[in-house]
Image (cartoon, rainbow, N blue to C red; front, side, top):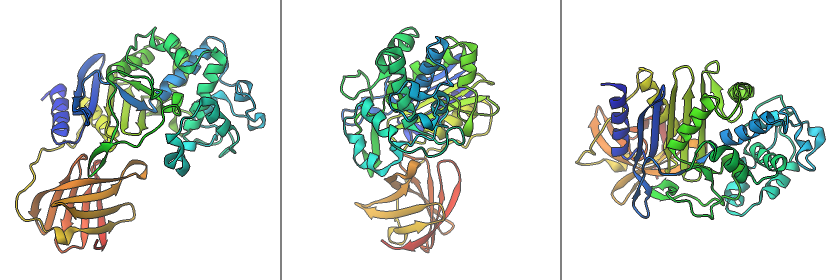
Length: 428
């Protein structure tokens, strides 16, 4: 089986098993191997995902913001070593935060998106860029600039304001005139949540079934995590960056050179500068983009169900292309017959995980934390009874649950293939 067939088989099994919903593009050495949409763009209106469906891309936005700053440096309109108080009024000069610090997440600027208040209240409220910047300015730094690395969406909002102040244009207009139009990225833009974006997918989450994601007011994210795009446009973007079409050699090198914590400018860098990648999460969407410079491959995974392990899918596809061993998903049909559900329900814990197993409406559900500790409740379906265990496979995520039929423990194999043993603590 060649790489193209193997990747298609991998994705088809995921899609048919309800483990993937979104769009994927895989390319190797300039050849697009896969470019396809799976599942639904809108569950409410039963609209299918395609290769040209637009997705909110979350923090993949940062590569565009970083490129805009580097372009301004290339044009001689700023210097990366400049302190940002030269461009943002009343930013504390004694802090010593430079543009480089913001780009590389080494500024110490506090990130509001990590605060409970953001998730409980502020993400739902219209907020101007000025209001966000004013909030950031009065918060104390988390560490001395240049001495550590802490991922900060707030830092990239400061860069958004810097771009506007230096260029004299709104952030969106600057990107439109200097990046989107010249590079023909016709399906990429800033999502303010109010204008109609044709073919934009809806964001979903999971609680027993697919539900609408929590609302976020899109006036907030801007140059930190506020863009939309397609897999095809993102592939064009990676080719532009890879081939030095927009930025000169010096600026391209800076973008893809790791600083503190393995972060360049808008990208996580690894493998002695061999790979650049980034995830992008925003309410109802999860994405992963990987570029391997040495092997000439690009993988883009965009999903509009936020429980999806886009990073795992991205990594697996890259490993297939590189002829490395991959744990292929398997198709399965739920087993018929008696389910010993009374023995299985309860709370299970380990040092790493918590799981609650419920029996409702003749279905078995599990509640578990996933990325960022967010809880999801999803169905697990009986696969087989064997060797004193009841084995289940989950919906939405490719996981395996093996329950001890004596009711003492749960053996859980997560989506990454890691096995966890959880002891039963209490019945529900």
